[in-house]
Image 1: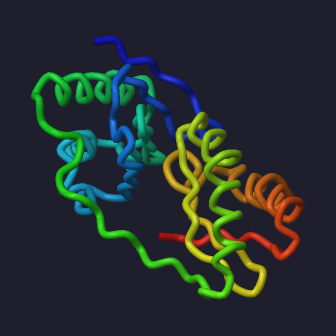
Image 2 (image 1 turned 180 degrees about the vertical axis):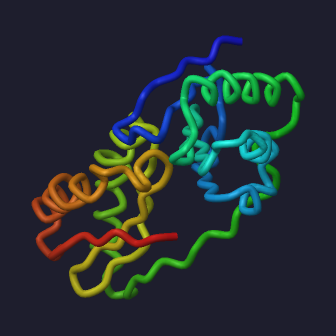
Length: 186
């Protein structure tokens, strides 16, 4: 098994490509602690490594964020080994399904929300997935779009600029009702 590694715009995060499905079409999963990762044997295995602060599972990639004091030169090979061990074990990447978070949306705005979601899915999510992350729609009220950054995008120094200058400008161009975009935390 050959696992590619890519850097991300977030210097504390690396993207690992195992050359096979991770989450596949089931979406994504973002774990900020070992306790949160109990339903994922893969994420649990990664959190057992000292220096792992966050694990994000994408369709065909895994991003790992390290703690401030960890060093990639020693952590990267340990992560590669843990990913390989996971796939050899035959265990699932994730068990069960996560309950979806409720979105803060006024039902009267259903058409606007559908347009926003389609733009996010077709124009934004592929780009942030390329950087090892994801962007999740959390709500729309009074012209304000609420989004949550995940994976490499969460905590990335450039994520606020991406939201304000990239996503907000694009949404305002295509959806005149959008006034602003705000980042929400998990």
